[in-house]
Image 1 (cartoon, rainbow, N blue to C red):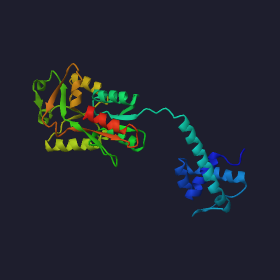
Image 2 (image 1 turned 135 degrees about the vertical axis):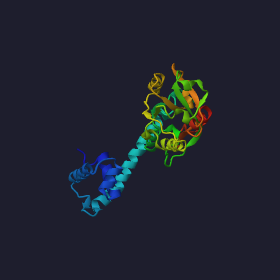
Image 3 (image 1 turned 90 degrees about the vertical axis):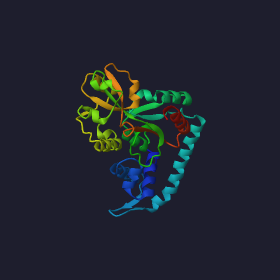
Image 4 (image 1 turned 180 degrees about the vertical axis):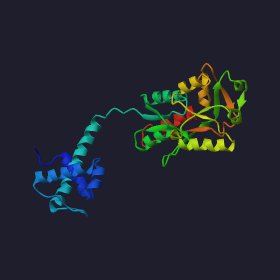
Length: 294
């Protein structure tokens, strides 16, 4: 076995630069015990002590001081070699990782995703989830972009607004209220209302309930199914009514009627686009989203 290898050098350099095994382990995305064992094994192979350690500090020895600049040069040369090879043979671009909020009817996004595929030459890798989870994925760099429902807490991420959709009422078409062209929250107060869980979109949930309190609206809330088609089936069966973004009106479902809600604008849900600025398709994403979703 060689006394030195790339993996051992990387661990040595991390400890030598951090002078703290815990911080070095975090930098290497590993836990501290295996890092400590690896450094001890390296010292045994080399036959020299690299670090003096006690409960207070980690101190490099003369051997570590001599090894560090050479280890850095070796690792830099390896990085340079890999970069040269990648330049000679560029890796195929990975699909754009795009998040879409489940708060809106999926047909709303069809034109956007089709135009995006045509412009970039590849279909995006789509994740459909609740908006707070999409934000978490973006912050963890597991998505390149996302269309989220607003309001949602976005921390330091920049959001491009794409307009909003008023709430409407979905109710059984045979219900007497379906004879009206428009309804109000007061009309629905004695009916069971399907509603989403707060965890799915806390900021929007709190906004809506503030509006509900203003209007004295406190119906019996039913847990809203995650699948929109299941929800509409239950409405058609007469189990309750639902407040939904206007995009849902495109779903023609036998037994379900959609009616304008007087407070619909107060309860409107917005759409926003978040894009990783460094992504090559950032400009295309913003332009297409504004054109197809704005």
